[in-house]
Image 1 (tube, each protein chain N blue to C red):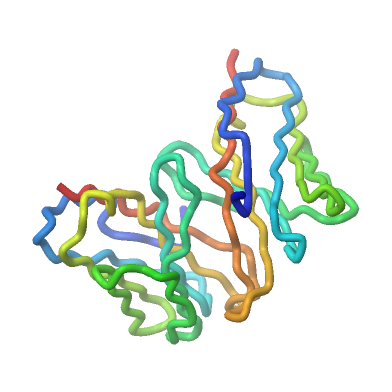
Image 2: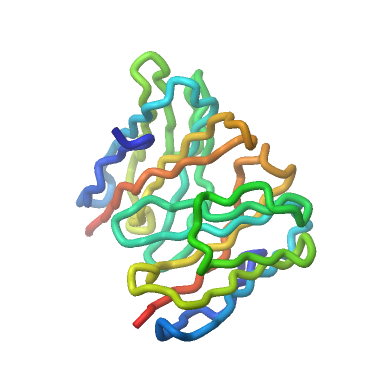
Length: 112
Length: 114
């Protein structure tokens, strides 16, 4: 089983739609969780951290379910500029320090 | 504009060539990383340097040789690569060493090995 699993998509949605992505992780010792965004042919950039209580940043809401070992990202009122690949990232403590593990990403295409 | 710059942006090399990738960060960070991104695969961590010291080598073949002369510069020396090494190579930096998960990535070097 992969450490971090995501549906690769693509998710094709009309502008203004609400879309949600899930990500599952296999290691229950994972400590922290993040969503990164990667535009086509660009570098990944941190979108938001995911807190146990859930957190919101404008149109974006991230939630964590430790019992089921998944995190989610909800995008409301999607814009054309939201088209990108969304990477789920999990941090866990290892012998060498904290280690980040990336998922393969979920591709979102927002269309007119 | 990113605070992490990588050169070259694109590189095509033969299997017998020797080349180097360069990364420079202007953010005053202590840790620098090399990641490999292949099509349809997750980012793979290759090397980590913390305060110029290599703290992680993620079972990377010896044909990849990193060098970190100071906290702002990171190199990846390449020699006798294989076609399966073709990928996007991303450099990243972070503050607070290994305990900071906010990575700042460079734009990457798209490498093609013929």
